[in-house]
Image 1 (tube, rainbow, N blue to C red):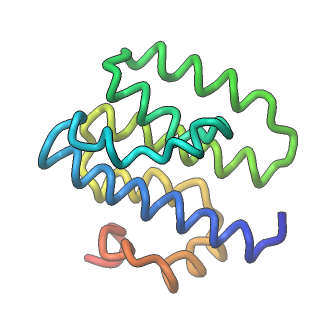
Image 2: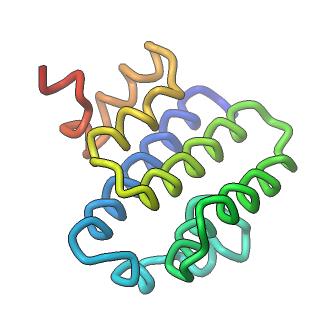
Length: 133
């Protein structure tokens, strides 16, 4: 995966997680049931699968174990990092974390150069704690 592709994928994960987290925090987990991308479920997308498990009411340990096992089949480093971000997002949403904390958690997987690129193009960048200080 090239650097530019990685940045675009990272932004997609972060922004999707922020949108879903906002909805869950306002309306509850069941409110996102229709927002889950079913086509991505078939592809075993970590985020969509994780959100489906949350809506179905599975506990943290079950969700963590399933997502970790699926991620174990990934050999390419940057794809593994994206999947790790997706997993972090799911577990953070399940925990009910503040959106700024979610954003900080996801961007903590980026180096400083990647973070700078993400903050340039992410619609959700206002949630980054470094921007509000």
